[in-house]
Image (tube, rainbow, N blue to C red; front, top):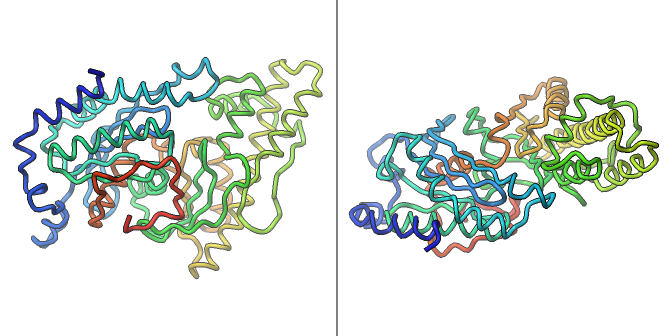
Length: 391
């Protein structure tokens, strides 16, 4: 029996008493009980994240009003497994999730100083993502929820990123969201739970993909984002003149393929393309071009947000792995200060994939009475703008 299968078997066999709990017998949520009693009680949600190359579990506590509390947040990176291939290999990722998820969940519960009996619901990333890994996390969560009579919440990975600032900073709706990661680059108006209006998206490469491919081209290694940022910190961002795709044009869409091509062409013209200073300067020039482009698109989004909702964005929330980039944070701070808009960027550890954000998204949905059936089908694609609160 594989370790993941053994864990599911262990949960089922150890939890017969819990399976007779009021939540299974009456199909009601803890939030329904607290509402009947006239108060909102804090809930503890176990979150599971397996959508790419991090195996993660976390427990978050909150009452649905204001920021929450992270009781544990355990992340096991698979970087060493994928580094020889220069990118994430889906089958390797899925097998690693299956091998390690049981121990990661056990550690999250132990670090929270709780038992599974204290958990009020179980949330798992159920898309979008590498479908093999998504299935591992989703099936584990379903098995635990079924065995223990707990609500199961299928979480959209992008919504988890979108709501992270509410976990860390208690940001109120509405706000403008810049979602920047390895697979996504979007600007959205976040009006409420499950209410997302797409203002702009990439027409070719995602921003994280552009960082990864540039890093590979320059021989900086994997993962590309941190490698480019490190090289750029030693470089001259003005040495090479690179394009700012779509800058100055209407709308909020992004494009990075032309910039990526320009980096390649510039590298080929260098006499010593592997020289350290050349690489550092080119990395810095690339990063500067990305930041200028994103700033321009965000300024347009400020206007579109106001046209749509009738108010200036109270806050710009930057989420996703690329939001950890320090240069990007600095330029976003500048444009937000100029526009009298609050900038909220979660701590770097909560920008990259983690389970605390999944647990929080599950907590918000559970407080709203939104749970998922155990026959919910994980999705490799699940656009955030198509998500509805009723799903």
